[in-house]
Each structure stands twice: as C-alpha cells, then as structure tokens.
Amino acid sequence: MAKASKGDLSTYRKKRTNSSNRAAAKAGNKLQETLHELAFQKFALDQAAIVAVTDLDGKITYANSKFCEVSGYSQNELSGKNHRIINSSYHPPDFFAEMWNTISSGKVWRGEIRNKTKDGTLYWTDSTIVPLLDDHGKPIKYLSIRFDISDRKKFEETLRLQERAIASSHNGIVITDCRLPNNEVVYVNSAFEKITGYISSEVIGKNCRFLQGTDVFQPEKDILRNAINKGESCSVVIRNYRKDGSLFWNELNISPIFDEMGRATHFIGIQTDITARKEAEKDLKRQMSLTVLLNRITDEIRQSLDIESIFQTAAHQIQLAFRASRCLIYKLDYEDQNSVLEPQISLMSEQLADKIFSVKDFELPLLNSAFGKRVSNQDQAISITNVYAEEDLGDLGELFYRMQLRSLLAIRTSSHGLTNGLILLHHCNSFHELNLIILFIQMWI
Ligand SMILES: Cc1cc2nc3c(=O)[nH]c(=O)nc-3n(C[C@H](O)[C@H](O)[C@H](O)COP(=O)(O)O)c2cc1C
Image 1 (cartoon, rainbow, N blue to C red):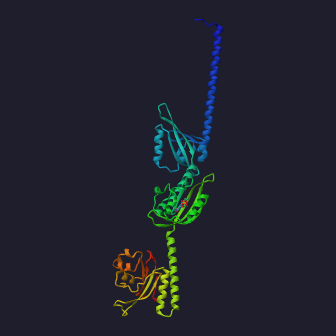
Image 2 (image 1 turned 60 degrees about the vertical axis):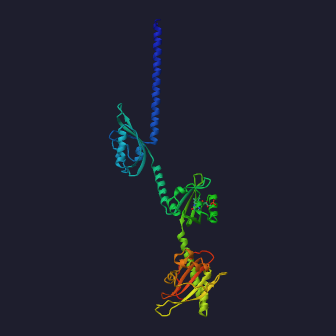
Image 3 (image 1 turned 180 degrees about the vertical axis):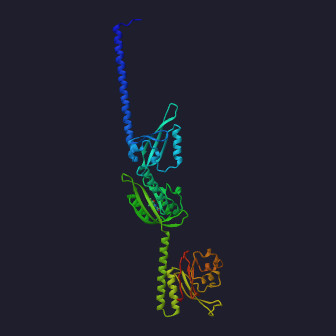
C-alpha cells in the first residue's frame, strides 16, 4: 500500500474541508429554500383559509389573521379561548361529539360548521381538522383549516327556497329543455300532477302537446309555436285533457329562461286551470239568453190578442232558442180549487223544426208516468241526453222510438206552487245535453 506524503495529506484534508463546506453550504441553501417555500405556503394558506391551532382541550393557541378578520375577534381575544366562543348553537351536541371522537382517535375530520362572529353574524365554514400526532400516534394538538362558504350556503338556501316555492305553487309549473329536439319536459311540480292527473314520470321526456289529445286544431297552438321559435313569452287559453280524458281549460303562460350568454336554454310554463271560470261564464251566457228569451216572449205575448197566439209565440220562441225539433206546451186544468182530482191536460201548442213530424195525435202518458210525476213536482227542468238510457223512462221506449226522440227536456209551469202546465222540448236528430238552470216561468201562460 502506498504511503501518502505530507503534501498529499494536506491537499487531501483541504479538499475534504472544501467539499464538506460546500455540502454544508448546499444543505444550508436547501434549508433556506425549504423554509422560504414553507413561509410562502403559509402565506398563501393564510390568504385563503381560516387557520387555528388548538390544544387537546380545544383551547385556541394560534389563530391566523383570516380567523380574526372573519370572526371579528382579535388574536388576543381568541388566544386561550375555547372554540365555543364562535359557536352559533346551530348544530346538535352529537355533531361536535362525533367530531371530537374522530380527531381524538387520530383521524382527520371534515364537515361544514355554522359559526357566529363577535357581532352575532352567522357564517358557514368548510372545516378540516387535522390532529398532530406523537410517536405513539396520540394527538398532541389540532390544526384546523376552514374556508368561508357563507356565500355558497346562502346561494344553496335561496335555491332550496325557490325549489320549495315552485313545488308548493298552486299553479301547474312545467320546465322544458328547448335545446333538446322535442323541447321535452324536464320538470313538473305537484300542482301540474293534480291538474292533469299525470304523474311526473309519465310526463318527463315528452312535449307538452300531448295534453291537447286529439283536439289539435286550436289557433292557440300557432301562438305557442311562434313564441317558442322566437324565444319569447306568450299567454294563451287552450283546451287540454286530463289523463282521464276530461277537458280542462288551461290558461297557460310560457317564458324562456336564458343562460349567461343570453341563449334560451329552457322554457317555464305556468298553468292555471280556469275550467270553473269558463263554466261560470257559460252559465251566465245561458242565463242571459234565457232572460232575453223571456223578455222576447213577454213582449210578443203583450202584443198578442188571444190565448192561442200567446201559446204559439211561446212555443215558437222556445223551440228556436233551444234549437229543438219540437216544442210542446200543455195546459193543466183542475176541476176544483183543492185539486184532489187529476187535472185535465190539453196540448196548447206544438212548434216543429223543419222536416219534423207532428206528435199531436200520440197519446203521451204525461202525468200517468213516474217521469211525468217527477216533472210536475219540481220547478227545475229535467234534461235527458239519451231517453233510451234513462231508467225512469224504460216503459216509454217504444213510444219514443215512434216519435224518433233522442233527447228530451221537460219543465213544468206553475202558479203559486200549483203545476198548471208542461213544456216539452224534443231533439230527434242527435243526442243533446240540455243543461238548463231554470228559474222558471211563473204563470205567464
Ligand atoms: C314550458 C312549456 C309548457 C307548455 N305547456 C303546455 C300545456 O300545458 N298545454 C299545451 O297544450 N301546450 C303546452 N305547451 C305547448 C306545446 O308544447 C307546443 O309547443 C304547442 O303545442 C305548439 O307546438 P306544436 O304545434 O309543435 O304542437 C307548452 C310549451 C312549453 C315550452
């Protein structure tokens, strides 16, 4: 083995010293770099997050400036205090018990906590609590990092409120996606289900036009189609049909919903079932035309000279007003005032529509049938849409057939509660619903 000379050794030592100095300098630099990096990360974290360190009892030993800024407390006010200082009494005790269980067993806990600032304002944080562990895995202290999510929570709350408002509205509400080819339904509320009888799952994915059933020649459809094509709002009243096939009048308002770029992505439709209003309007119209009819009859009667033309006028006007095939007016005469005997019944007038034959010579069991008794005992008109389907009239089927009768309306006339006449309206060409609320006719006959 070659022996090193004295010069070699000192060169070697110098070299070694130089190299260890360089290593130390390098390590020092690395440490500096790491510390710098850590300081930077802490600075960045402090900008965004509420950071606190607590001891094992939950006492705050460090609070960063964001914590002070959000909570409204100074470092001094927070230092040494329990986190209870910012508790808003919102969460049940179980919530925090579970949190303590998790972190004291060395695990990380995450959750959303509602807290309270010094001046009582509530704020929400998304919180992560990390236990710092000793060599045996036991927590020494806890580091909490929180983000203020109050704005998000407020937004979510507003959304939930809007959802609840839409869901509980008495108007039917439909939302469609107009980016899809068929502008299909993506949402309906429970009032829609109640009005239409369809449940949400039967409707989602369809275009609302299915509510029109086979009633497709309605001008309102063009108004709706044009508004949708132009991305505009519109209002219509349209005939729609429930799941059970019954008609309802739908007062419908549709409006586009735009995205941030101003493009219509959805439409919202608000439905009001105005069937009852429509019915009331129809009743009112009927009442008005009745009043007009009565006035006309009264006028003509005033101008008539004899009783025969009075009956004829009345029968003619009634037959015209109801577009009936026949109008028959009978008069009842009682033998005595107390009317113990059956009254004498005589046909006073028969008015016929074009091509309808007379039934003058038919013997009608007017008062000798259950139906006749029913008519002569009440002021309200009795309307029968299909005379062959009416139980009361079972034994008169053949007679009706001979008269070519299909629908019938019958009403008595009376004076001081005593029946003094009968009016019959016949429909022979088709089945008619003769819905008539009759006030009717105190004795003008
Ligand atoms: C949001 C929204 C709701 C609608 N709700 C109804 C409705 O309740 N009843 C109805 O008959 N039509 C409704 N429509 C209209 C039909 O979907 C359809 O646009 C209309 O029948 C005209 O188009 P069409 O000719 O293609 O059928 C709604 C449309 C939209 C966009």
